[in-house]
Picture (cartoon, rainbow, N blue to C red):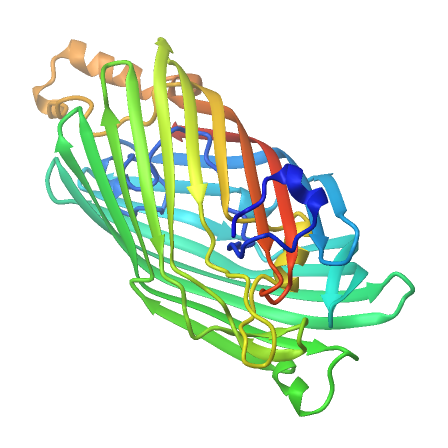
Length: 446
């Protein structure tokens, strides 16, 4: 049993081993930093912002992205789609941190406005009772609210702690019709997520090694669904209408990161992210038209970055990552489990989801030395003890041009994912996804 290479798609799917996928876009940052250890105004580790010297901001977006998807079900022809993916909320990662006092920071990681986004997606492959249907999908996603707040406190010049809170609610309405106009299903989904995070950032060796750790003390993911479909009727379809479920986890994820200054020119960063799956999950399977337990697993993802100073304020950056997936292939029948299915396929094929397992590599350029931290220089003298020359220098620094306070990064990221589910799985098929992305990141003080 093994995962086939992309070139083996023409050989069919019966020999593909069950592997795991998860359809969810992740924000991409062009800066070569550690998610948990590097000092930043982002909420990934709420303690990191305490080391900032000034009010700071950060924004990462992916304005250009291509998405090449191939899939093939057992007994059917291969289907492929290549498209330019539009910029979405999930592609953006903003962050703002205020420093009212030297030891204290407050930040905003996300504020989503109450807006709606409509998309019409043609020829989405849907399998119902082992029959492949090409469906036209109309989706209307409305953001009800989205907010992320965090704060950090500097215990001493080497250790900071922090906490954060995040919550988001999105309502999605979807209608699927076959190519001849027959309604396959219509539904409304309300997704609510809430999380309470804590973290710590520690300078293990000054000007050499920084460590960071963060975890979600509590997280809740709830979904309320109401689906109408002519494919299911009677008692077995009751779980489709007004069905609510909520997954609550204590310490459901853990991220550990490190930032090492190998020499005055080179910096290495790495992160390990562990996520625990909620084994009590259930969902309605369109393959068997019944509710089944979800086939989910714990995962460990690895991210690594490097930054090399070529000239003053000019850096070459590079990154590698590997991400497994928490969703299994499932199994058929009433006593089986629901695996990678129609929900994940629709997200993947429409460009609103990513296939896992996957690896990626990125190369880019950075201009600017990054955000100033309290460890960069010795604490400034009190104004009363400054000479007139010192005060003049301080005033000039406060009036620095915005370009002198800006760090700008751009990179090219190649991401490759492939998946195979053999005939013991719920939905035997072969999947492949190739994404070419151009993320852009900006950091500045204000």
